[in-house]
Length: 383
Image 1 (cartoon, rainbow, N blue to C red):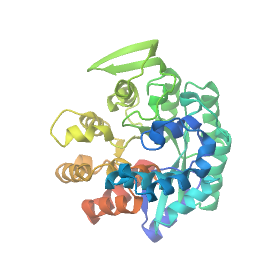
Image 2 (tube, rainbow, N blue to C red):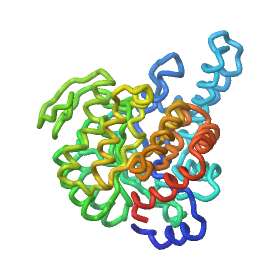
Image 3 (cartoon, rainbow, N blue to C red):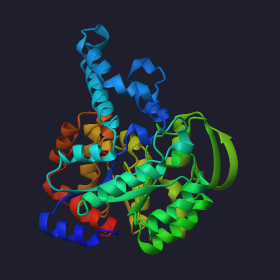
């Protein structure tokens, strides 16, 4: 870790909250198809969007929200438009630094883990800035805030250059961890990733993996499935190309927590954060039905360094927060493995960030928040 001393001194002096999951990428850092995936359920009745549309979009949405059309008289619909305005206003900023500074306005004392995004191969489309430029912007933020920022490099094994560059960013530029988003088209046990997991386990480099729905996925629906695939409690060694258009199937094939079991059996001491704590599975879990949450819990209890953050999930449903609190209060093993992650600013799409954050903190309470926001992140991040 490049700034270990500054961060440890800051922790000792300020006792900050530590978020393991945040973003500062702009629309310039992701293909325009990402905007389609995130906004087409809400804006312009699902019509495809282009990057240039972001420039006036927040103003257009404000106008729509202001007009007393009957379609928007429903409070929830009107609030969703406002949420979209907040999201668009943030993502269309020109630099990652602008977004990061905005995030600091919500946190008095904090350490923030900024996760890159690498979607070029997965969803395609026009991207105005390169992966290298995005990485440089995060390095610049870390240099400007050496006691408050950690940065994770995003990899995609379907891009050979990305795997090659990963070693440079870990060893030369001292990135603090790795970010993966499997539903962009690869299994956690992809052969080209397994060599990286050896290195991460040996050097205690933490890994954050998306572990929820597959809203963000390959736009060509063509998946080259390489590695060990978990499906219906059966593990199968695969090397095949498969067309998958159903979002639920994509999620099960790539984002399901138990897709990590083959990796962890080989590298049981890998530091892994199952991001969003199987978010899409909480609806079933709180009703006592089998769900992804059970799979995440299995990994957290079986392997010493597997954790889960509740980012974004905390903004989706207040009952999910209550379910998490009940789980942590009744199971000390899980309490010691849950992490705080704000998912700034993507959770703007669910509800206003200040409201979501306050709701989560109020329900969880100070004692549990101290555990998941200070104690556990230090263990996961090795700081």
